[in-house]
Length: 172
Image (cartoon, rainbow, N blue to C red; front, side, top):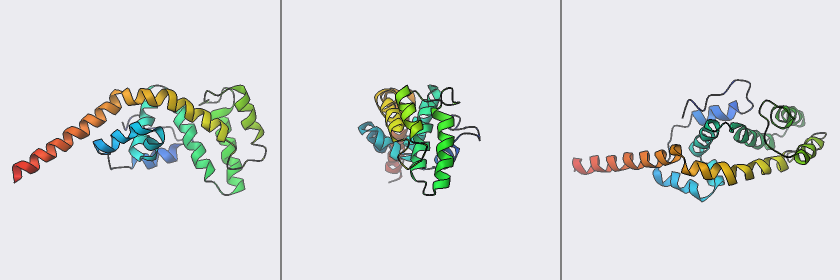
């Protein structure tokens, strides 16, 4: 998993990735199983987000989660100057035609987003972000739940839990 979490220093989401990499608490099998309820539930868990990101990178679609994370960070930006700077960076990295990590959105959404960047506000990327979220939810998320990465995580946690239970019983 750690190999997939490595990004170049130029990546917009490297700050978020560093936060994820520092996450030491792996989810229990029960917690990981709750990720099946919704993409939101999984993205709310730091390890769920890291696992999903690793999966997307393995499928060469890591730009989707990076864009989504960049938008989440952008929404929290209060300073108009910082917001304008981040908006430009997000646009150049993810939205612009032939951008280094161009996300798959239609021309109308690109044009709509570009027009909203003349006076950036916290919702400037909402339409594009929602389209990418829907793409991840309908396509990547379903494949993630069937992936070896996810299934092994659940099995590994179940084995670890049952081994711990066995060890406790033998000590009594």
